[in-house]
Length: 192
Image (tube, rainbow, N blue to C red; front, side):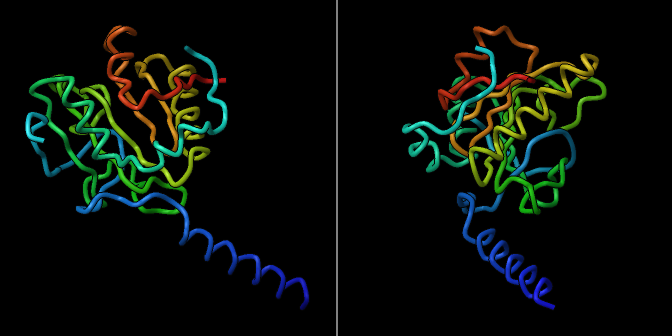
């Protein structure tokens, strides 16, 4: 019986902490990253390899960034881009707002869709995922990079992390171009 009460207390504390964590999402409620369904689009005109280390002092600035704000900064560097904010209805990963998922996300599109590429696929430009913590963002980036390393047929992408923000950029562009799109000045994450 004592063990049961301890487990219950631990779960209660974890639930309370989970409710306190994370960064806020944008006012329209967004959050995810990869390919698929319908979306609400807006015109962008309007609107080193190695594993990443833990947080630095400048990550305090990153914790105030939102997925949409970063998406707008990336789109400003790619005239004619379209930004699509993720919702729980169009999130192709089904991670938005879910346990172990991101709190917000947006997709930036400047490359025409190729056959087989989903509407919100990173291969069409870039995506920004906003996680509850830097650790979560790094973990997601490493997971994705491990998939690309293990299965090159899936293509490639650049993953930049700063604070809770993961900026994913299509691997179809040159490294120098990807570097200019690293508007968060994040660290590049690679597979271990």
